[in-house]
Image (cartoon, rainbow, N blue to C red):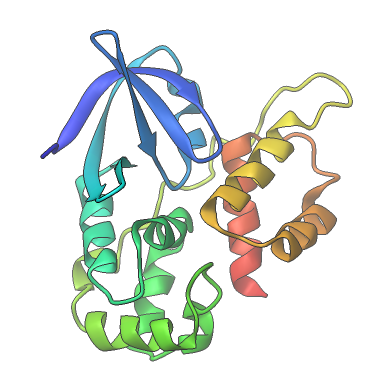
Length: 204
């Protein structure tokens, strides 16, 4: 029903963003809402997918149309729901994801939350050879986004990143590993923490 929503960024939460459009606040689930931290109170355009079930209706949002198209391909795979697809999109390394499919790298694919061996095999079966348009596309890099001024002793951005990982479906065990690896780094933005943490989790 909806192609995109254009409005003001009103609020950011670990699992979703709120866009104000003519006084109506749209709750839009996203892979990493904190990519919009520098756009609070500014107008932006978000591509959306409306997921309608018997007992719920949700909007999923994307920064680009290409990101939305990858999401649509993912949810057509048996065993991949919208939230699992978001967890896959949250990782910067889209090229690595496509390459894993082409290489039948099931081990890599099972590192995403909600993706077991059977589902990973289904991803390969359904999408191998069909994602060439995404091979050169990754989420915007970290350059220029890492520095973040916080009050002395505060680590709010890190805690927000942890909540975002949980919202994506990562386990408490995964979060514990991230805490051990990154807890002493207090000068990153929430967005940068999320990206660094996801990169770390995919390497283990």
